[in-house]
Image (cartoon, rainbow over all chains, first blue to last red; front, top):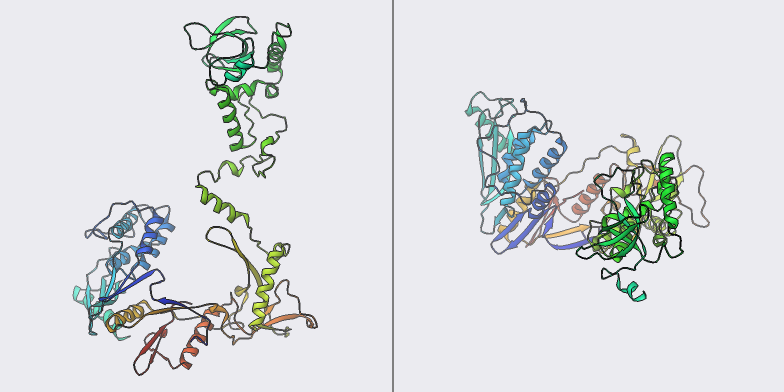
Length: 201
Length: 400
C-alpha cells in the first residue's frame, strides 16, 4: 500500500472520528468522551445537574398538541444530530434519541426539555462507552423487544434489538415500526424480523 | 510659590488667588445653566473641608469642595478685576438665547466633562481624561447642547501614530461601539490581532496584487503539472468546459504567526452536468457495525490495530470521464509552448471540487487493494480482507 499511495502512518489506533480507542490486556474500550464534552460545552450544559436516567420512563411525547412550537427549532435539530452521532458508543441513549428525533420538524417545549434531560444524563456518565473483552468467544447472539402502539400520534409500535458477538455488543437499534400492529404479538414479530434482517444482511 | 506648585498635587494646598471653577449644585439647575462658575481661590475656611472661593460674577464668597484649579492663571494679576472670564460668561448668556450650539465652542464643556471627578487630585483627573480618550477615541460630549457641534472633530495628538478605524465621520452606529477586543485576555487578543492581520483575498484579481499569493499560486500550479493533472488542448465543439477558481488560505502556526500562504485550485463542480461530465457519485463509507465487529474481533484475537492517513487523497485518482476545464486564472505557458486557440485543460486526474471525486477515490482505493491481494467483503463493501499464512489483514475505508 505504501507504494500505491503517499501514506502517513498514525501509529496504533487511538482516535478517529471522535471515537477514543484505548487498549489494555483485558480488551479494547471505545468511548466518545471528548465529543460528549464538546456537546455539553457548546450547549452551555457543562455545569448542569447530572441525571441518572436519559429519559423519564413515564414521559409521553406527542408531536401534534396544543403546545406552541419553539422559536429556535434549528438548535433542536442540531442537538439531535449531534446526539445521534453519540449513539455510536452509547446504546443506552438510543431509545431516547429515537423518540426525540421524531419531532425535529416541529419541536415543542416538552421535547426540548426531554433533550436537555439526555444532556444531563450524558454529563453524569461522560466516560461511558463500549468495552470489547479479550476473553470473548464468537457466538452471535441477538435480542429483540417491542412495545405496542407507543407512538401517540400514529399508534405505531417501537421495536429494538441488540446483537452481541460473544460478550461484545456490536450492533443495536431502536426503530419505530413502519406499520401499525394489531396486537403486541404482531409488533414483537415485526421486531424479530428487523433483527433477523440485520443478522442475515 | 514654586514649592506650593510642586506640592499641591498630593496635598490640598493650592496657589492663592488662582482661577478655579466650582461646580454648581445640580438640584435647581436646568440643562442650559452652567455646570460650573468661575471663582478665585481665597483660602481655607476653619472647621470645613473645602476651599473658600470668591465668585467672579456675583462677587460673593462661598465654600465649595468640588473645584477644578487652574493654578497658572490669575484673573486679578493684570489689575482687571472682572478678568477676561466674565466676558466669556456674558457672551454665553447671550448666545444661549441666539444659538445654543455655540456653547460647545467655549470652555464650558471641558469643565463639564471634568466635573464629576473634581474631588480627586489633579493628576488623576488628567490621567483618567486621557484614558477615556484612548478608549473611545474622539468622542465629542455635547451634554449641554441638543444638537451636535459644527466644529470638525480632530483626532487626538497622542493617537497620530496609530491607525484608528474608529472614525465616526458620517457613521451613525460605528462598529467600534459594539465590538471590541477589550474583554479578551492579552495572549488571545494578540492571536486575534495576528489572525485578522493577514487578509485572505476572495478572488484572483485581489490576490494577483500581492507577491506572496502569486508565489503560492505558482507553487500549486507546479505541483499540479508535476502530477500531470491536465493537458492543454483546444475545446472540442460539442463539449462544454467547467469553471475553476482559486481558494486562498493563510495557514497560521499555533501561536498565531504566519506559516505559509496556501492557494488551491478547485474545479467548479456545480457546473458539471449529470450524464455528460459525471454519472455516478456514490461512494461507500464503512458501517459503524463493521468497525465495531472489527474491534470486537481484534480484542478477542489480540490483533494489532493501526491507523493510516493517505495524504492528498483527493488528488491521487484518475478520471475516466472526459472533462474539460477552463484554464486557471493567471496560467501562463512555459517558454516555447503555445496555447492553442480556445484553450482548455483536459483533466486526467481528479481535482478538488469535482462531483465524482469521492467515488473516483474509492475506486482507486479498491483497485489498489485488490491488486495487493485483498478481498472485498460482500456484507460491507468497504471492508477488505487479506489472509496470509499467519496473519490476517483487514482494511476498512473510513472516510471519503
